[in-house]
Amino acid sequence: QVLLVESGGGVVQPGGSLRLSCTAPGFTLDPYVIAWFRQAPGKEREGVSGISSSEDSTFYKDSVKGRFTISRDTAKNTVYLQMNRLKPEDTAVYYCAAGWNLGLWPDEYDYWGQGTQVTVSS
Image (cartoon, rainbow, N blue to C red):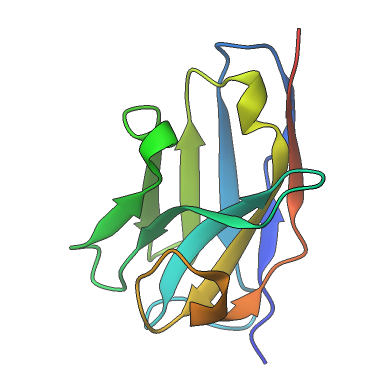
């Protein structure tokens, strides 16, 4: 069982930045596709960004393209989501997930973290 741990959430003003981290103590993330999802109150969980194990493929939700960047640091066994120019509509609980296929749907992923809250508010 792979246990994922997210960190880096918080409260930020519109236009600000946050960097989320996803790691897996005791397990290597190297072979897995890693994706970030988010879920706002009353809404379905949606795919935000994902990165292949070889880092040669990524995806981004249209509304975050140009503002968010996903990356992975193999040496630190960590995947990051750099979020710039944050907007109030980015407010949600953000989850990282591990799986074998790079896709936008939660059902494609086998392992999940507990989530970290991101709140964008003035």
